[in-house]
Image (cartoon, rainbow, N blue to C red):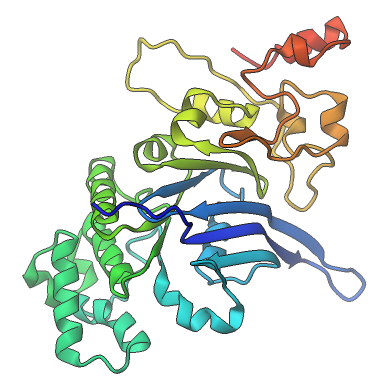
Length: 345
């Protein structure tokens, strides 16, 4: 096994992506802040998982990391060098993506051999056809498929096999970073574990850096080294996997974990029910975005936006979990203290 280098393969600094929505002859378009200032670092041989509810901006973050979309602001680097839009064509071979849908991501009119060779045809035009074919057959074997699958069409495979083909295609250019956007969420539960084990084995063999996008915390617990929890386009908690799962500091993270099914029905469980509606990304509240749904909200939360602080494990919260509430709320009324304990079953 290769030992991961201490230097990150990819970094993101204050990455933002905004979209203009609506507008017309007499109206200005509104701004939707899909991602609002996210930082991360990817290391060879390690997996960074990004989790959160649908619409939190995690897939938009994946598209920016793979240069499918240009950030509105912020900076991406690869091997310490800025990833400028004019250089993206040459950089894409180092960063590849595996999409969620194994049925829609493969061309139904192409044989598997042609699908696997296509990245080489586009990005390495000087490579001879026998070399491309040998590379494609080698990659097919690497992901656990048989030689006779080379000449078949995508409709002849199961969902798990198609996702293996998608992984093989992503690896054809020998990338350093693999972005996995919900790679097993469309698969049967019995197939998910085999694909996840394949991804972990490939990471160990090829020393790949993974950016793993998921809403399934049980999957994240299985594959991640570090975790970023996103809410309304912002990172609200970040840290090593074990620290985030065993000692969640942001109330939103704690609520997510409380809703995750457990294999042991006899295990004690604290179920946290969030009240209120998820705010619109077109009208993110002032202060902490989670304040309208949080059981720990105080006036400070509504007036100021907390920063993501604390290393290696931090949370964007003025009153983080795992800290004595009485110490934090010196001078707060008894009624407010009682409200702080509400919202839980």
